[in-house]
Amino acid sequence: VEAFSVALSSVLAPKDEHNRWTEDFLEAREARTPPLSARPRVLVAASMLDDLDLVAAVENSGAWVVADDVCTGSRYFWDTVGEPEPSPVRALARRYLNKLPCPRSVGSLAPRTDHLLSLARDYAVDGVIFYILRCCDAHMFQYPLLKQRLEEAGMKTLFIQGDQTVGIDTPTRNRIEAFTEMLSS
Amino acid sequence: MNDARDREIKESNRMRGKKHLKTTQEISGIVKEYYREREEKGRQPGQKIAWCGIAVPKQPLQAMDVLAYYPEQYGTVVATRGDPQRFIQVAEDFGLGREMCGYARITTGYILEGLPEDAPLGGMARPDMLITTSAVCDTRVKWWELMGELLEVPVFILEFAEMPPAGRDGAHINPEDMENIGIQIGRDDAPHTIEYTWENFAGYIAFLEEVCGRPTDQDRLDEITRASKRVSRIRREINEYRKNIPTPMGAADAFAAMFPGTYLPGTKMADEFYTRLRAEVRERMENRVGIVPEEKFRLVWSGIPFWYNMGLLNYFETRGGVVVIDTQYGCAALTSGNPLREPKRWGPNGMVASVVKAVIDYNCDGAVMSYTPTCRALYIVQQEIQNTLMEELGVPSLLLESDMVDASSFNEAQTMSRIDAFIEVVMEKAKERDWLPDPPPRYGPGE
Image (cartoon, rainbow over all chains, first blue to last red; front, side, top):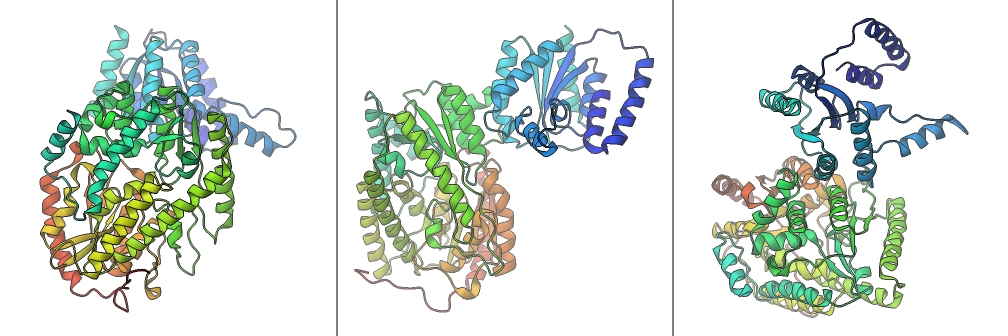
């Protein structure tokens, strides 16, 4: 939840203010004892996830969200702009054209699959939760193959459909709890 | 045995559509022959096969001797002649949601089942390539990419420009613009769209040449293009006759009759079919033979029909009305409209204006709209069409919610009671119809 909040703030807030808040946050965070409990480690894959109740529900159920592939999460800052030569605008354009693709882009399935698999490996992920907005065809058409490939790599997956309303309902909370329980066993 | 089974399924369909004209009765045989011929040719060594989106220009495929199948069309075949749930269920188990395109679910299920030979009409032969367009339906791009992954063949996406709204002087639709199944792919008042389309069209030709391993026969392409223009002209002439009161041909026949013109436009078969159809429609018009004895009301159909339930169109006939025209597969005629009643709103790809114009051109009193949540591209516009019809013309319309091929999404009892209530409103509206300053145009023989 904390990492998602920081990422979301970087999307929404003026950059200098956001950087100041992040520094303060990190300082305070480092002073605290790190959580030691061994919990199932979950990756969340979604398009927009601007309401964090879902992430909170995962963590309240007894798992950690350790990584994400979300437009408003790590996909926003994952790739760097690089050298601002010959001009900053070109560098920004190059970054937008070559960044980790959103599934709407043609040919995005292969790089997305590779990225999800390496995230899962690097962050020792036990399970992946797909949160896909209703009628988001770009995600929906890629989901079955991504699920198949992640499961082949030994991952458990959970599919949750949303409609970008605020909060999550009890049936969804129950499904998340059952998923965490399955990952724990 | 397949024929008997085929007949049995069609007979058991409670709401099977009824066609009124003699020529359109041929369509069922033409569709069967289309699949039989493909099955036979597809087995020959070296024969290239493509699965294409409906808006892909057909002439280059014909010129290159590429055997084309159209997964959306095959979805209608499965819906009308088979059991769509057989494939839909497989696709949903795979992970495609119920809110996704029914055509895509049927085709994906069919692929996952391993292209079974006992699929309706023998199914579609394994393709060497997949081609689609970006026009109107963005779903196809992702759907085609998924098929490319499952079938491990190259995918080509032919990009068309989204049409900008027409200028403040009012929307202008050239009938020829609406020929490509009602999708505009370029407009004179927006030359950049034409340039963009041409560039992408060149890429499409290059892709075909690469997969087929030979250059295009330009003379043959020109000949096929000329032949398909002639077919389009005959179809526009037929649409002109349909403006008459009583209409000599309604949408129940036209939805079937669109097959040769949509999928085999530059062929002798299409030419001969529409020539026969034109003669029959003209004869009916001259003898004032309508679809019902006395036309009490006339309707436009907007959107994709429910293919498993084409009898819905005939239901209006039992109440004394006719669905005269549909705007989905080309409503262009030779003449257009009443200049005093040009549509004020254009809508995405001219879809709003095309329904407004159809109401006026074809002297209609209401519109029936298939409200297909699984077809986002059309669903999203229908509400605006409904509002515009009411605001600009005071014309009532009815939204019927269902998927176009997934029969399980159709609620018959609720739909029929809504239709009955709608007919009452339309009958009142029909009493004050005055769209055209002059009586509908009449065309004599030989013109």
